[in-house]
Image (cartoon, rainbow, N blue to C red; front, side, top):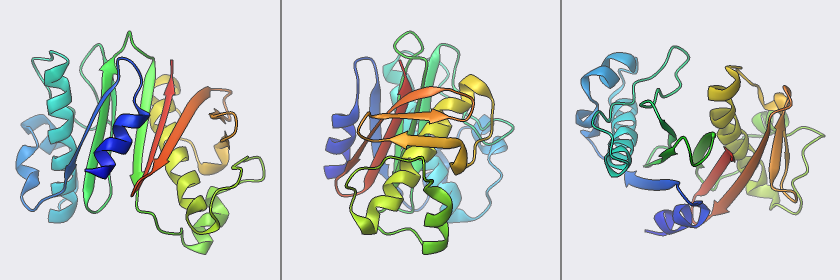
Length: 203
């Protein structure tokens, strides 16, 4: 699968990843603690959550975790087992997850988006004058910025506990980094093949 190859290309030593097509009935993969913590009742949304958790469960087994449950926290953030960092994302059709032992890096965030332009009104909110995005394609460039900022938020929240807006994150693709309004500096990477994949982490 092209997305799986692209995801593998974004990985770092100690970080593992996986992906899965979202299928009807994937909500069956939600463990009891996860199901209770996920409020979504719409079948497609629960199936996507189940697909993402199924990928996460496999990664956690590879890391030797006896209990692979990843329930949602109070603000919707995944709660990983002690000693593990990770991130889960999905679009309408595909779910991805990344995980590592906490000794490998401090925090990580992942996002996946379709290669479609953002609605014009959303693009005006996502991109800020401080962003340095280089020569991104005009049509999908806004979606890349969106994905990267989503990944940055997912990686920064476990460290700072702060809810960030797009305006709170400045990206510099030439430097390969992002800085949050609290001064948190993260490394960012992305790929477009065929979906947009974004990774943010602190080593």
